[in-house]
Length: 497
Ligand SMILES: Nc1ncnc2c1ncn2[C@@H]1O[C@H](COP(=O)(O)OP(=O)(O)OP(=O)(O)O)[C@@H](O)[C@H]1O
Ligand SMILES: [Mg+2]
Image (cartoon, rainbow, N blue to C red; front, side, top):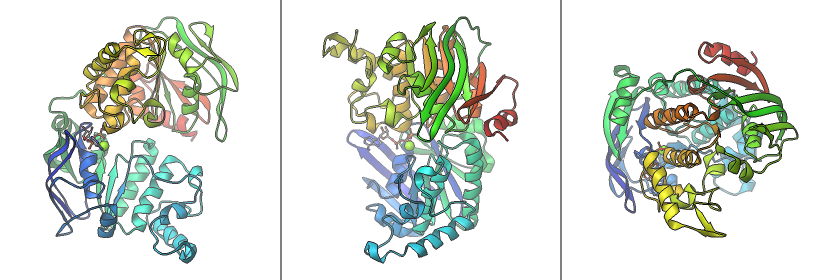
């Protein structure tokens, strides 16, 4: 269905695709894997006409094609779902789907016909999407399906999915994969980019591995396993399990009492109490959207609680600002790195001192920053956290997703915090970097620091946490021992089933 031959694509000095050659067979699911920055997204954006290759050939459906822009791609039957959804919140599903797809004036638009079409497509694939629903009322998983419908509505027979499961709960991933299998049965061809090896093994027929801008391997999924795949991706053996000793906790660092935080639809956090001690990692498991975001934002000083108390090292800090909390020793790795974590148009140097730019050693006088101190800081982060490419002058925007995450994590670790608040630390991060980040979190704990970890990945949160709380509808509904609790048990608490 698709053949790429010796695709090359550079951005200035940065060669994102050096030599990409791969074959995707018709009516199969093809996984593309590789480290952060390997060039996966770039290669697929070339296929979708988002970038034009500097060199190489694209053969689609048996013909040599030139894809100048996404219009050309769509005309050929190629669709792409990006990692960041591109839906308009206050419009309906149907309006979003036909947006840009219908030709002719708005007056000619036959919304009823479009609605019927969408409903039929949704029914055929059991997507369970109401064309009249507003986007803002849909869960992340449902929005994902709207993105799929959008591509299918444009008659896509070849679908590219760039890290589609990164934001889905385990339950939603299962449903999503069932949908992909039904699409395959309807003779659609699917390319999926993912960092999760269990997903590769569960859903794909074939796998292509990329490294440093090149395609370096191709296997049939039935003939490989997680360990071999990991070695092909990273070029060495990877520890796929977390290794840690038992925690050795001491005094309470964080105490939360009866905290209530308002969200967009009423109470997001509804009377939560817990504590985190020095030397332990407390995990919070839950389906996304159950108050985790608002809880962490309140603890980081980014949202005002309605009531309740937050104490840090015995002091009431409920009404402190984000900056004051940072000064006291609370670091925060946010879940949404585009919204909260980075200045995308600023370079890595500026991003590496974000939040500490006004004080020593970065600031040498009021409003004056020391360029040597900044250089030192950014150099250390790039080196210790393996940010690639290691060039402090690049804008944050030009880094691949996983490398943006490493930059933020490095910056917060450089603060040497007493308490680290961390959400979804390894979302979009490659397996080598996951191993590294997990080790760093455990090292921080073993230095006697307190860590509060929110993760939608049950595997991650059970492997790292010393104590595990489950949150549902803004309430802590249980505490389990992560060493002994089964995923079923935790899942039941999460869903209330
Ligand atoms: N628009 C751009 N401008 C400059 N450099 C870019 C641009 N897009 C990508 N790059 C660079 O090209 C390389 C490949 O990036 P790409 O996004 O394709 O990687 P990826 O394999 O998708 O990584 P990830 O798993 O982190 O998403 C990276 O070094 C990245 O910094
Ligand atoms: Mg990518």
